[in-house]
Image 1 (tube, rainbow, N blue to C red):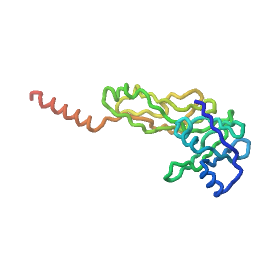
Image 2 (image 1 turned 120 degrees about the vertical axis):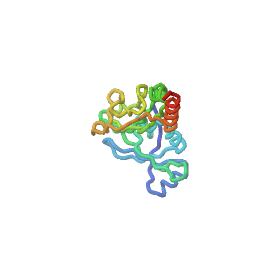
Image 3 (image 1 turned 60 degrees about the vertical axis):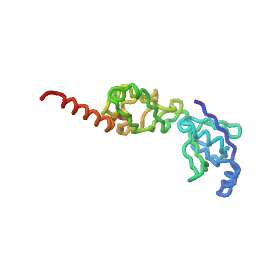
Image 4 (image 1 turned 90 degrees about the horizontal axis):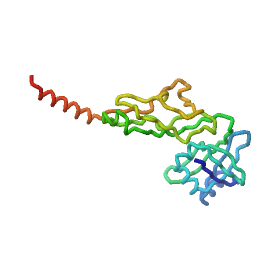
Length: 208
């Protein structure tokens, strides 16, 4: 998904200027990184607020246009009001297409309903991780990573090393020797109790 956003250059600095900016429906922001100086910008609050609801906005290369010049950036930080639905400030980082980036990417779990642990054993899938930190070139950055649970059985756990990754993508934790659990299928206690009760009933029916 290609996401385009626009901004204007921001000339006034300081808390007072930022306060007035927010009062006019704008959000102060900054672009940094690369071989250029940091640039202060301002963005339309409502447009940014709605884009922040998109999962892909947080894990994609964004095309940011400022005064007619477009740059490729990543969303790096968001400051929200403690209790209002208001964005106070955002940070964007410039992207170099030839340098690897680190980015948190969401996990999408698929085929849970046909896994033996759910379909046969009546288990429930537990999502231990919902996102992973990956390293890759900007062109290889996925919006999400699919985690296939089709073969997962009850009582077993799927780990980072079990995941099938897109080409050119590495999981940072694995490179550091951390093979964390990603998902597991557990049997609810109620199901175990029902199974135990059924076994007891069968035992009572059998002649001594």
